[in-house]
Image (cartoon, each protein chain N blue to C red):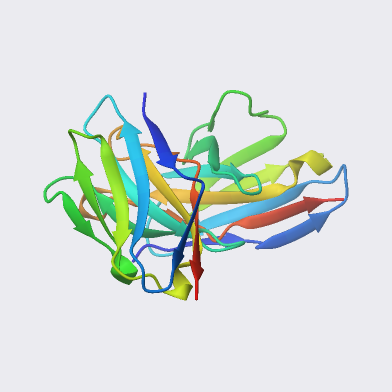
Length: 116
Length: 115
């Protein structure tokens, strides 16, 4: 079945630095990738939708300049947290939708970001 | 707009007992509905989904859910709980914007299984 590989699984960075999270679709082409953020003991909140070859669509309240999303190819989408602050510490998950009979969503394994 | 309500943020059952996790949805279009399970510090794993056709959907690990349009519900059940079922469960609805619709998640229900 469809697999989305997300890296890194955990990252600790210092305040003010940037962190890049990658999501790769391994055996299918993902023209769209959804990026979620999950706070402890809470549900997933959609941050943005990346589309291959075009600009990402951000949800209301999400800072475009802080959370840079790039969908460079049909198999790679990246989220870069720029100038990270402790409040950016969270669990970030990507997801790619399927189509047709395979309709469903494949999630990456998530990235635990801790900003110190 | 679509929304999902999961009744009960925490459900505790004994091993071998029935598991019932409740989910109600609101959707302006015929919904696609999903149940996902999440173990600590991991991504989400699809348990089952309803798109069209049979309203009783069987998933992995012995779980099933029934789509009831009249009740706008999609409750998740399992006849006999195992210790390994302890996890966080999320119900979700797709807004079905073509085939690239976004998922709207409920707040999640944490399932505890007592020995």
